[in-house]
Length: 199
Image 1: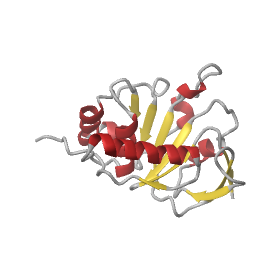
Image 2: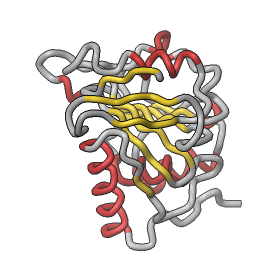
Image 3: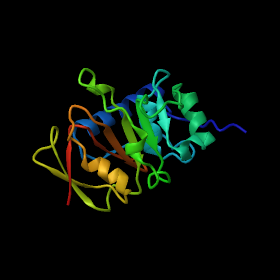
Image 4: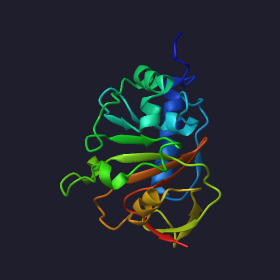
């Protein structure tokens, strides 16, 4: 039985749509955007699948958290639709996707994702982190480029390790990790240039 399912109905236009939405999310940190062009692959949330469909290709090394790696539907569809490899080490990964079920156990500081270097800060890893909500939980205040004054967001029930990583955003800029939080079809991005405070 094949695990391959449909992705974008219109591969070019849907991919461009998602890319533009992600660009808005990254350039306006804290802004919620909706990705609704396809269902999720396996246990992947729809937005997680669409981020990877829009951003990954056969030259993109991906790192997937254990639940995703063990999900044949997720891995086979990512391979089939993007051509991307899913066997990258954390440090070599351009994108890393963390499943909601894995988030409580993931130790980000032990995985050693790439934070870029002074010559190529843009080579850092982008983390796609699934959460249970982007409309409940602790409030966080964001400030920095793309934000007028400041904005307030909620990111659901985060593990202490993910929360610590979030609160460290902006401290090492221009180095650091770009974070994309997803819940269902909703996305909020917090790039490495953004400062985050707990409220």
